Image 1: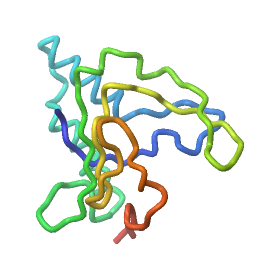
Image 2 (image 1 turned 180 degrees about the vertical axis):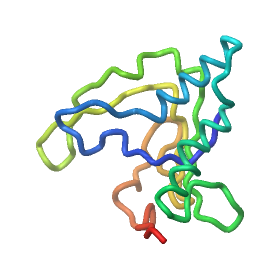
Image 3 (image 1 turned 60 degrees about the vertical axis):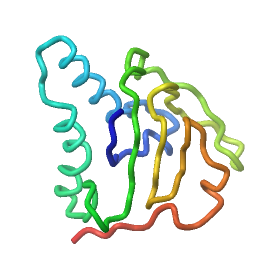
Length: 142
């Protein structure tokens, strides 16, 4: 399993373009390069590029797992990387009567914690997510 914080909304607001899913696609490419015996970097380095490096670039206090910090964590199962991560689907936008492009990659993202609160468990959104406060907060740049 791979644990990391991620800066991506995976296209949550996109209706006409599907150039997202970058974090999973990058981790898949790194994972494949390791399996082929020619690693472009370690998985740990890839996770840091997707989290800590971006947080540092944006000047925000996030992207690293440190004692006392807010816990935004994604738990992945790399064995699910064998599927097509570029494929997109139309999904309903609840309460809007609209559809949006989404990625559906079952078997990869197992668990998500946002600000220490369980948002996704065993690949299923928890009922409280989107209905209760406390999942996220604005992170201002320094």
